[in-house]
Structures are given as structure tokens and as C-alpha cells.
Length: 504
Image (cartoon, rainbow, N blue to C red; front, side):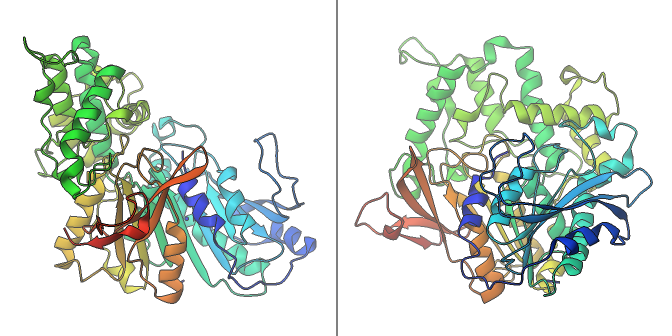
């Protein structure tokens, strides 16, 4: 027994491998021989050596990629499955480890660009197209097995196949395996921990879209309202106004005025203060616009399950759009309902009704895409380590999803201490979706995970940095939730060394 935007993970990978031992060089013939390897659920379609710097295929500038054995496979665990994957195997300096990388949204493609950095650092690295081509959920119309492939089966099959190939290619045994992904890749990560607890030794789940149906419903709820109420829309200047007011109201809640909202879930900001009146400020919001802000922050409840469908939080406003949530959130939500819930290509946003459609979506999904099971006992029991992270200012997937799930794990296990040696959540103030934003948003979560898995060195904090024009201008420790970074009272507030993690 022993992985959209992924600059955080790439930065992590760039620091890895330096201390790893070096294994032997593998021959061209051994790579080509993989073509005849027998797989339980598929066939090898590619087995070729790619020379140093030769992989480009008009896919962009990949830099000087070291020589590797490129293996492609098609997996068919069901009669309607057509799962493509690639595994890149370094022919020299393999570090004895394997890392699988996640996908984004409904993406159906092997992510070559995400394999370059891990390969360059000595990892055997794999990616899957999740069982379809394209960036919509149209693949699921009339194909329930393909929905299962996308929901969870493709990553598991990729893991099993990759380990089979690695064992055949290298003389030395695989030491550790990891999965890292953000957004939809974070959903895949959580699904692996919940459904296949022995697949990976360690998992990084960034901004996990674990409540897949909930995010779809939340985004369409706002979009439906705004499509028919133009005067209620928030234009760019309006969103800037709300953001500035939110920061002004919430900044100091974490004990430090630094332009970042460190506790947005505990902020009492009321956008009504921005409503226009006879003696108001020059910039203000119409009552219907104030209502829009409240709707976006709101967390309506599934009337059947009683579970809150989390809204966005103060500090995320600069990522909002004229129709509320991000365009990607709306597109993914529309696809979810059009192809996977109702199976009707003509279904449109105007037909959406939250109270009935959120119930229908969860019942239809039946734990296929959603990754909400808080019982991680098998994963923890097998020795698995899970690091999750989320930006507090994420406008794409509510960060409250991550904290809500964490609290449900606490309820399941009885206390935080019961699983703190296996699962830690790191919330990043001022960070957007997977990266970006005014707060420190680049950090090495994978190295922290490796130290935890391989050396039993649990991460008490993870240092994050913010860059301006390529130069670091701020650093801050990210703390295991619910701890927060507290300023010691001396030194620059832009240097992580002047902060400590403290319980709230």
C-alpha cells in the first residue's frame, strides 16, 4: 500500500526529489516491452521512449523535459468504459515514488502539462481523461457507467494500472504513492480517501469540490435570480464596493489589520450598510443589489436532508461576476442538471427551483460525484495521511465546504484529537480558487505530506508566500484548522517568522 490552476502543487514538486535516493537507469527495450504487458481491465496503447526535450506535440512550451518512458493505456472496467491514461516513467534517477494528478471541472483529457514537473523531479507520474473527451458533462447523457468512471472509477483504475506498470518497468519496488489535486481534483482526492482507502499513502486535496451537487445548486440559484432581475446585478464597481466594505468590517477579527480577512466565517458584515439613502455615500447599492449580496453569502438548506448548501464568504467578492458565482461554476452547474440530473439537453437555468432541484440532484447522484462521507476510519487505519487546503476568499467553491466537512469528521470521530495525526485542514486568508488573491497563496503542501508519511513529521504549519512581479512580498504560516496565525507583536507583519499558530 503504500496527486485549472495548480501552481501551488508545481511549486511543491519543484522542491521535492533532492533528498530522494536514485534508482537505476532503465533501457529502451524495457520500455517497449511494456506494450505486451497484460492488464486486468485494459490494454497498453503507447510504450515509447521520449528523449530529453522532445515532448512538445504542439502542446506548448514544456521546457527541457528529461527522457522518460511514455506509457498510454485504455481501461475498460465496464462495457461502456473508455478510460484513457498516461504514465510517465523517468528512465534515470527515479526517486522510488509515484504521484497521480487530478483534473478540473468536467475536464476530459490527460493533463500532460501537469506531469512535467513531477517527472522532472524523479517521480513516476500519471493522469487520466476520467473516461471521456471534452469539457462538458454531455458524456453522461444515457451513459451511467461513464458517469461512474468520472465520479470515482477512473482514478482508482489509473492507480491500479500505474502500479502494475511501475512494477514491470523498475527493478526496485515502489516506496510511496501520492495523489494531489485541486478543485475537481480535490474532489477526486477526497473520493479516493473515502472509497479506496489503501490506494495512496498520502493525499493532498485542494479546494475540494466535494459537495458537487451543492455547488451546482448554489450557483444556479443566484444565476436564475439575476437573469430575470437586471437591476439586482452587481457590476464590477459594485463588487469592488462590497469587497472594500467587507474587508473594513472583518479585517480586524483575527487580531491584525493587514488587508486580509482571516476569519470570514465569523464576520458579521451586513451589506445593508451600503444601501442607498438620502444621506448616503456617493457609491451605494440599490436594495435589490443588497439582497443579491445577502443571497450569495446565504447558505440555504436541503429541505430533505437538512444539510446547508454553503454560500460564498466575505472577501470573495472580487471573483464574483454579473450573474453571481463564477462563469465556470454556472457552466458546471448547468451541465450537472442538464445531463446528469434530468438527462435533457434542452434543460436551462430558468427551469431551476432550489427547493426541489437540490433534493433531486443529491438523490440522482447517490454518492457518485459527491465526496461527503465523513467516515475516514479505513483510510486513517491503513496509515493514510490527508492534507486539505482551501482559500478563504475562493469565489468558485465555497471555503465553508471544507470547514463544514471537517466539522462533520469531528462529529464522526468524537474529537479533533481522534484524527489529528491523520488529517489536517489548512485555510489560507486572502487566497482565491486553488491559488491567487491578495493573501499568501503559494505553498508546498506535497513536501509537508511526504514528511508526514515518510518521517512521521506532522505539519504544525505550512509557510505560504505571496508574490508581486515574481518577488515574494509577504509570507504567513497556514495553521491546522481551527487554529489561526497570530501575530507575536514584533517584527514585520509580512514575515511568517513573526506569527505563531494558536487555537481560536
